[in-house]
Image (cartoon, rainbow over all chains, first blue to last red; front, side):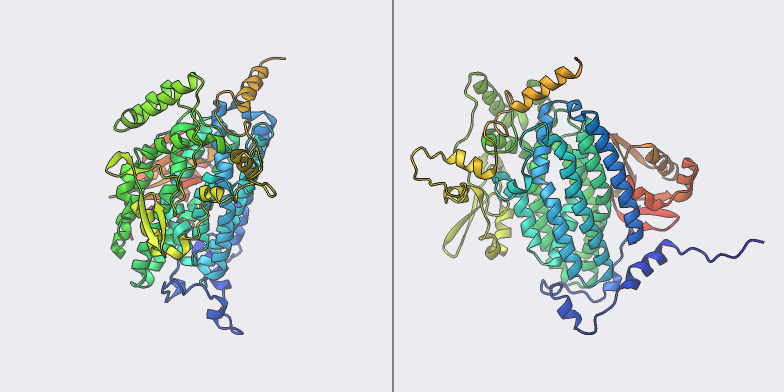
Length: 515
Length: 89
């Protein structure tokens, strides 16, 4: 006769015992002193036990699956490197998307690690603490695996050499950096809405899904591997963000207007940051998976729409900025690439004009806007470059005080007119790219007046290497700024056509079939 | 009714998971993209351990899906036997 074995615990029981069952309330010190930050934002929590972690992942299972993900990742990275995989990508222009990713995204993964470690420490509920702990570990894994994977490109191509230095200095990198600084300096609940909900749930699909699928489509097994490995954690992150928003809304009706304000703010902040991704999808991937506009339709309008339909039962409305975003989706990628084309002399990656067939693809994907507003400008620049007059803009752009993007966005009702807004605070004037960035500033001016705006800082003389004297004869401001950025002029930056990357890539590929 | 969706990396394990989802959710819409597969289902989706095990020919823990997941949409309810996604509450 079989021995009677005690039945193995079910998933729900295991999770309850291994997370909730391990928490306790402090007795030597009052809980309010141990957790000083989870009340000041005005969010009212009556019962932390109502928090549900839908994945019910326990730490032992977490380590097991994460280890397997890393083993898979490194097997692919090794194979890719051993096989000179970098020569298998569609063309060398593609590699510029990786430079943008390494300097603009990977440092944010590290900041997300710090942010979730902090929030996990500050939330007194056991469910969110465990989920934030896992996410914090995930995020540092992402930063490390991305840097590790892309270090293979650093051996062959320019502009990959100093991402952590660049994120704190280069003009366009202040866009993603200020986004995270803004989130990280918020209270724990706002951080959860900013990163966990608006970024991870509403917007992350727009970054990772097309990026990874795009990397695969362009033959980059290395980026595909780290992208997939990171993305396999994202489903858990998205779920944490969604659970957090639902939890706040269910705990107290007074939380609803606070949460609504954060959703409005962070949906817009994230939408503006993703302009960079739009540009990458429409202009930087030699083989395109889908247009930015198509991705926006699927992941923001349809999927975000489903989510907001569901949240309506709590009184949450679709953020007001969604209407402007629905107009902007046909414009922003073109406007952003035009700016990077003009300013690639101060970036760590190359820019180029789209080829005639790429312009036809853009016409087809953007029938309402591309031919009318953007094709003539790119054709003009292509012609200028053919005549030996490649256009580089030497005047620093004005940038928005909140999103820190150069003022290139147009009026929602007039794509031929740049959108300018301004507010006066303590007798100083501040400038914005949109009504939504202005509204964010007007609500918290003390926070945003402190913004470190790269063009302003250059004009103030704060972006030259130490010891450089701008009054010396022969002083060249641009050269000194590039040194301060750690950009090697003429190698890391400027026009793609004729660049060292372009030459090396074609020479190496040529050699691949010869002895 | 809004769609829920789930997306996986395309590989040998997910081929079986996707076959199982298609069998258990007759309204599923499959969308194949480079290196990934996205499955949409109106309203709700059920992923059953037993069906996946039958397709794979081995025992399977639903949490193993974590290794291959790319993204999803909807509220999750997970037990040892089933992984459910829905917009119902």
